[in-house]
Amino acid sequence: MPIVLVLTIVLIVVAWLVLHFKKSWSYWEKRGIKVPPVTFPFGHAQSYMMQKKSLHVMYQDFYNDHKAKKLKYGGFYFSTTPVLILVDLDLIKQVLVKDFASFTDRPMYVNEKADPLSGVTFNLKGQRWKDVRVKITESYTTDKMKMMFEGFGKHADELNEIMNGHACEKRPVDIKDVFARFTMDTIGTTGFGIDCNGLRNNESEFRKYAMKAFRRDLFGVFKDFLLKICPKLMFSLNVRFFPKDVSDFFIKLVGDIVKQRESNNITKKDLMQLLIELKNRTGEHDGTGMTINEMAAHAFGFFNAGFDTASTALTFCFYELSKSSHIQEALRNEIREVLKKHDFQITYNAITEMTYLDKCVSETLRMYPPTGILIRQCTKTYTFPGTNLTIEKGTQIRLPLLGIHYDPEHHPDPLKFDPERFSSENKSTRHPFAWMPFGEGPRNCLGMRFGLMQVKVALVAMLKDYKFSLSDKTKLPITFNTKNLTLRSEQDIWLNVEKC
Ligand code: HEM
Image (cartoon, rainbow, N blue to C red; front, side, top):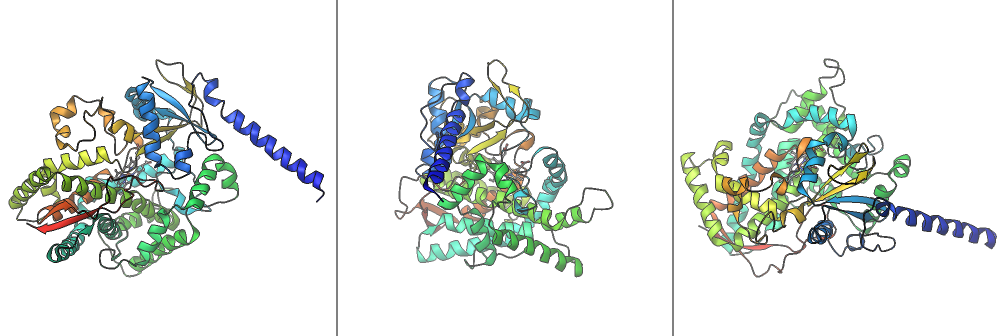
């Protein structure tokens, strides 16, 4: 190719890029919003994109800065994508609940044809989301929850055996690793009806592909970035969010389970059973049935939504309890008293009676909300009440949970682990949106009750028999992992275990 042609192409590309960045970075100014200086090509997201800060801490810093300036919202550029960050809780309520009709979607990449697993409920948009949410909500009622509760028992016993080994041999336990394996096992049993053997055998196929679905190396971060800034191009190129082998593994797994159960007339008390019932509705109620790919997306979504969130909550709850022996002791006393009334059995009803347990879990989720942020996309041009701010369809919104949950105006002395913040009296004095680890409004978490139960069962099973304290193997201070999309500690958390 002649050199002149090459130079011309390079010049055109550079000129296009300069114009594109200039135009993109004028978006907020045109709407009268002053933004902090941007860095090429990251916009305001350099610290996250260069893996220096976790995504959640990056948004928390932005929140704190705007809150200090008494601003109710601020404009942010995720590279060239304009993102509105809300600080004021009344505006947040407006988006999540009052004017939900203008914010029904999340700006997630969905390509159900090329990447069936991208069709998880969390990602779906518009009418497709509404239809699926109605259909799938049936699987998350209290009755279905109680039915799936039985699946936890076996894994709680295994957890107990593992802890016993550590206590007898006086070996500290890596709590992050143990709870990742416990939550993987409970989800395998209650979601897929399979034994993942995570607690006994680290190398199961399920664990291998499940971990691969979550891993984000630099290439993954770059792909996420492209999916965010040019989703239409990525869609037309049939780019996948999840690797093909992960997708093939889950679709085959679900297909095999369905075949095996249907040909042997097997029914189990798990999510798969509920999905099989939904699948078999086709024909009876037109359009309400499910394909194997859709079933795989929901089962994977169940795993995706429930695995990291619950293991994060458990890890941080044990970390905080290990630092505050008096709170741990008070919780153990409540657990033992309630279990005594229930024949020492860990039942659904026994757990719902444990009010201090609920406070400890709520406080953990305040300090460590596993998803870190809430995400919405504007679906109709919208003017925020009481402001001059109008945003168009397509504008992305972030609600920084970490910022809100550590805001001293809502939670005084925010670094202190204090379950009493969740007494009825204290709760009634707070803005109801000052604590939102499960989101709010019609798109809130579908698996809240399931997630809470999973966390509480493990806490009860452990604290009734063992005392935990922080091991000096834990490297302090704890920081958040910079690669993960959910909140995770960078360090392993090692605890000493004693039988009591
Ligand atoms: C401690 C555990 C969990 C936490 C902290 C958590 C948190 C969240 C949050 C913050 C959202 C976004 C809500 C919003 O944008 O308003 C969400 C959505 C969702 N969660 Fe959870 N979750 C947990 C466990 C689970 C479990 C176990 C499941 C499944 C059984 C689940 C299923 C879902 C689904 C399907 C959505 C998407 C809802 C929709 O878009 O309609 N979650 N979760």
